[in-house]
Length: 94
Image 1: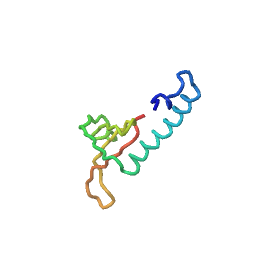
Image 2: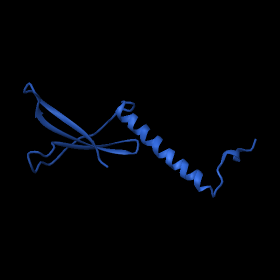
Image 3: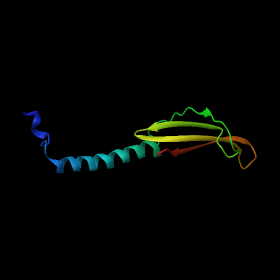
Image 4: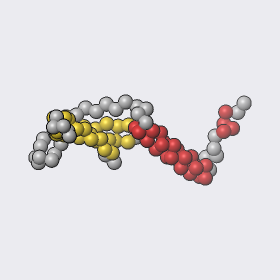
């Protein structure tokens, strides 16, 4: 059987456009599920950050999930009961 039977024509821009369109949609959905549905563990190294202002984070770090870069910030604060906690916020860096 000819293995080149399923290869697109080299000059088939319509096929390439369709492939790129669907690849982008599927890739972004997979990345979203990996993060939102907890399909991938998240490991972030947090480093003590220099504090110039009181509102600056105490720790900073970055992590990549799929092709997306995330920034993590950690703050010492108090919860509703007054207990000291380390609050971690993870946001998209892009």
